[in-house]
Image (tube, rainbow, N blue to C red):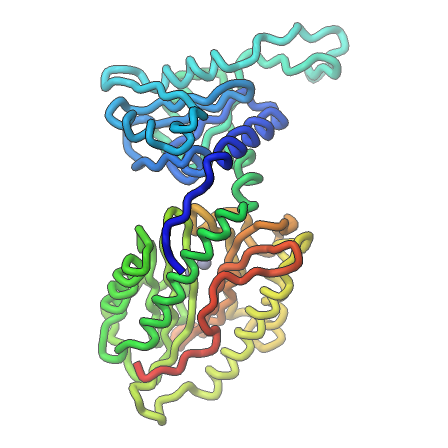
Length: 408
Ligand code: ZN
Ligand code: ZN
């Protein structure tokens, strides 16, 4: 399965409108969306994060405007939401004050001053009968906006309270629509093919870094525009969950944790499989201890996945895996949360972690990736991307979750 899917343009209109609705509900005057996944999500506009300010101003009650460097205006006009007339483009020249332009749009988009609070105002200054009485509009800024831009905006909008636009956008971005699920599936299947290719190739005698380069090349060959990470943790390095591929040479008779992913048409893949390389020597197969550890892990991953359904808490999915691993004697060796949301970013909300009582809803997409790590010795992890379907889990990754015992 391959090819390049696109988000239907009506979706951008619906997303922008929904963002306004949620912003109004939260009493915000405007959303300020800088370069990154939020901007891509709302408009389809893809632009490099640079020192020149690019910012989409979405007044809660009015049309959106993209303030963009003039040299990027042509590209901005090609964004799907721009072609559909869903936002205006306001280019700025090198000598203009772009932050002041954003501030002017915020002020222009703010509703007129509400009537003065009447005598019903209580001692704390709150009124229970008047509408919002704030003189300065309250704005929310996308979380990946650079500090250099946010500080300039703070100077241009003195006295304006600023919060994170994540409070608005998380609600939209967590629940994937069918087009997004399709794109996550295409990315997942491409990553699966790379796992199978690597598992079937030569590994023993090569460095982790060499294999990692091959993983990146293959992710791109399978359609990813970006190979974001290619963790190759061999032997004792398999016990370090975010191990950087090193110059260590892979030997027969040890495991390799392969955790790979990137972006495919903007949507991220992220999958982990554990291999055991024998070098073709039957005497170098997995130890009984490792097989037992892996059996516990595989059951934990399967049960946590099976527990996925609308209305279950994020922390419960973590607990399902953790309880099984704890009962298997490895509780202290499962040293990270069970999963993270995924979409236009590899790590996004929701996080499946103890303490997060948020309930899963249909369309949420996330990883289920328990691991067991015996520091200094070896470890294992299994990771799939799972979508919460109406009736239960939809598992996007399809490659075998069994321990891959390969000659390498
Ligand atoms: Zn991963
Ligand atoms: Zn992950």
